[in-house]
Image 1 (tube, one colour):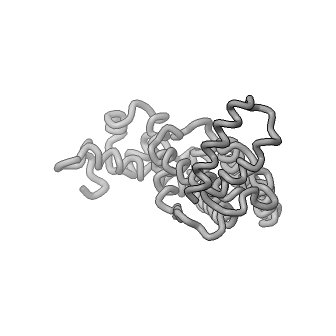
Image 2: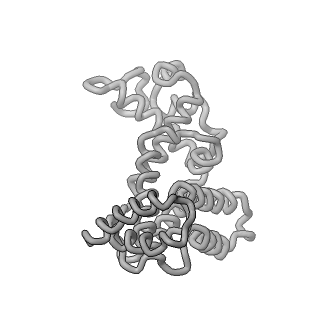
Image 3: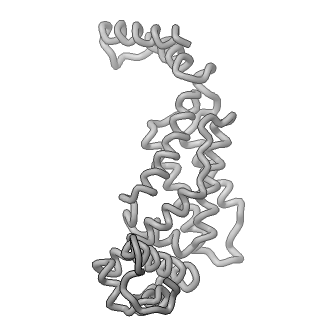
Length: 242
């Protein structure tokens, strides 16, 4: 249905969902072009070709609509991500993922500020969770190659927080204050925080990790002798498979 008509729902199969999507896209477009203050019921309805009361047949209130816009933003970001299953250099893959997140924020300032500047806005969406899985995949590859120096979920929090902080800090600055070296420095600080200076595991994969851990077992005291013996047996099996 062309914009400018005043029906509550697009005719035909799936009409209600199409209308809902039209409202979300209209709100996202207004947000991107004119900022958060422009996203009013009246303005969104006009942009979507609806009467203002029709908005509330699809969303309980404006807050629910903004949640949907945030989900739309996460889905757009997810579509831009490229998850390389076997990168030749996991450190460069980490940097590339961080750069992509920051570039998305700088290209979509109003949308990004709403997505990440408001606590937990849209973070229960499937797109957000899928994006986090891509990040965790990068982190697991770092761990498997012996680069990871902190626990996986802590690494994810550090990576996520530094990218978000970089974008929001950049957006808060005037043009004459913005120095690209800030973004590079924050990215490298993130890399230093979550990775070792050299890999702990020389041979990538489970077998190499098992051999490295097996070699370190005599130096740790957290396990009892019986636990060490059992773990040593398990690690030996994994190492042998490699």
